[in-house]
Image (cartoon, rainbow, N blue to C red; front, side, top):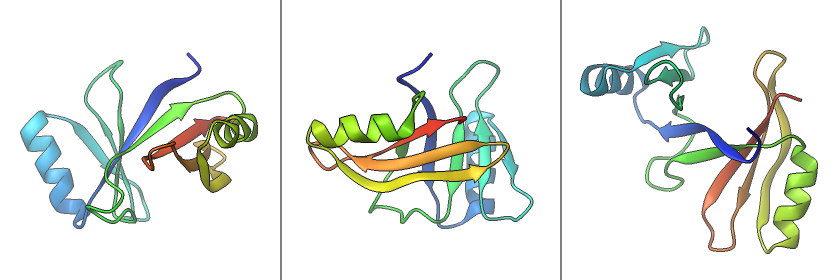
Length: 117
């Protein structure tokens, strides 16, 4: 479904410790990417998952929720028209994982957009 939250990123200062914590505390499945700089988590089948991201400063950016959209540039244009601020234009994650962009809402909260195309 478009315009729904599809991904959440949790900042971390220690990826392996965060992996251990979320696996043990909540029983999540956490998979560290081959480059060792990011991990994907899944609470369970059909549940909203996300990532553990050491590139997001803890305490500064907080958790980043991603909204699934069909057209990132159109969504960013709408966001700007509504008083939001584009932080990062459409950027490819990888051919497998699609694209993302970042914005701040009218109150300064940072959120993300995601699309497969």
